[in-house]
Length: 166
Image 1 (cartoon, rainbow, N blue to C red):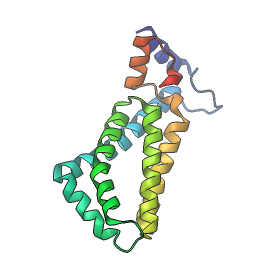
Image 2 (image 1 turned 30 degrees about the horizontal axis):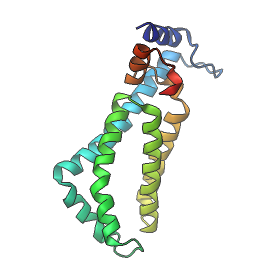
Image 3 (image 1 turned 90 degrees about the horizontal axis):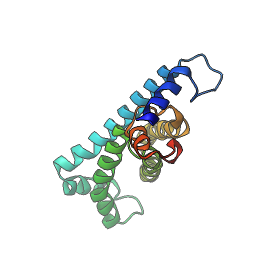
């Protein structure tokens, strides 16, 4: 509990971000929270909706999309079976703010792989959208010191571990 109080006090007095800007640290923390939760919810719903329609249905829908690429159909199908689970898990972790650093690295790796697939299909509109996701994941990772309102902070405060290890 003392860790949470310290983190909140740091937000109030601005110790956690000294970048020479005029923004209030509370606003930065709330902005980080809202961006993290929004992108997490988006990713979570992407995966969950695909799981609810059936992972095999989703996987089967991908195979024709990649028929004119060098990727074998079986690999596209296997990826389609795994993708909804990965999206759901990473989205939920991001939404809750649990293991945020490793989650953001995982999200970045995922969007890298998705961009690869989209690019070999030459679907440039979708690839452009995926660059927005990549930029958001990079910003969230780069400015993790603004991640004050998360399960990571709560867990670190209970364990007495450093906030940087999350």
